[in-house]
Length: 509
Ligand code: XMP
Image (cartoon, rainbow, N blue to C red; front, side, top):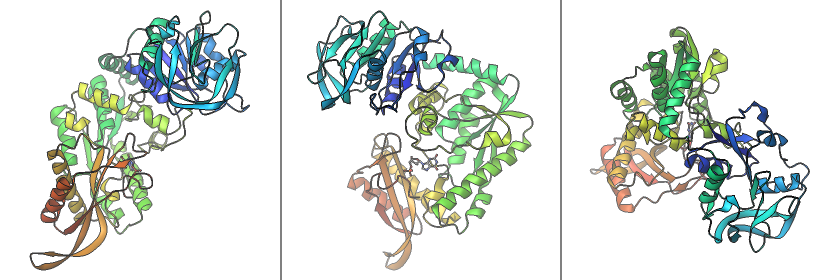
């Protein structure tokens, strides 16, 4: 399959570069600048993009051009740091600009460059740089300029090398999509190869080839990723797939039924189900420290998984719904900083001696949701909100009991019903109820009560790493509060969390 590789120099926009290429229908992925590129299939790589990055090429320690990129004999596009690295590599001069350019800047474009064909002569771009190319290397010519930046772009037609000081991948660059499209289709000559239907067809073939007649075990949590993964693998190998769903007793209201029903009745996939809730609740009894709760749940999950895996004969593969972003965020897919180490079933494969199968590891979350829809999962299932591995144990402050689980589940259902009734469900990224470890005095029907408090959390976020609290209208909050205190036993107070992340986090523990 034709591919465009993006060499990662650490820019916060490097993922966006990959996305823009994918959105134009061409397969692309990020690759570390230090990687050995000789392992890539020369027939498949049709173009190379060098990303931006936070360094200065004049700093001796900053990353350089990996000369292996020239062995592919394909067009190259340098972006921001990528342009400076190319200029320096070919003998040009890069210097620190006295006036930095950050934000939306007007640029004059020379349409005679293939890269800029059809682009407006004067257009806004997104710049973010302090270094700039002040002398072009031999054989290069300038193709665009801004007031502060004489060479906002350069090209060497003979070598098929192009470079831009600004970021075409950022939406603020008005002609960004046209420029990237020119690079892909006019310069690299790639064909659109990426539709979700093609992808499914190719993946199914690939899974069949890898697995052959062996058996695959997959832990499903009821979340989108593992469920989509199950449906995809099942399409390839049918009953050679053993999906295992462990109920840790910390699920949301009716969650186990929703998951089991979707698999059995809507998808026709047999799921191996283990209700281990009594074990989790026993071990969590009296535990109040958040990290301890998380560790207990994590360890028990592994124990139960191992135990159940032993009962299933001859399993050779362990499948996981790992996504592309999980790999990058865990610091394994590129130069960007480690943001969060994802703790799915990460430790299992080595210990259990399974071969690993991760068919979604080149996809983003929204692509997985699209895939899920194509594979026949319900919209309600596909668009479910993120739910933490430790489940409701970290939405109950203090010790976890069956009674408290009932309370928090019921309050959460009411919250969801009212948010949906108000038509806000599409506007809010994540919302849930939390049971606080605080009892207060109230009065109900002339009687004194001494009951629990429920906190309502609603946030908007892109990736969960930062979040802004959502302003639920007061009339909706009033309805939620009134229903919770009236319908949920042992609750006499509802509070609304109005903190963002940072300094708060989304979950309470
Ligand atoms: P925090 O609380 O760290 O949450 O601001 C950020 C996002 O991650 C989810 N979350 C988890 N997801 N395992 C998960 O798979 C976990 O242990 C976990 N803890 C938090 C949380 O719901 C939010 O979307």
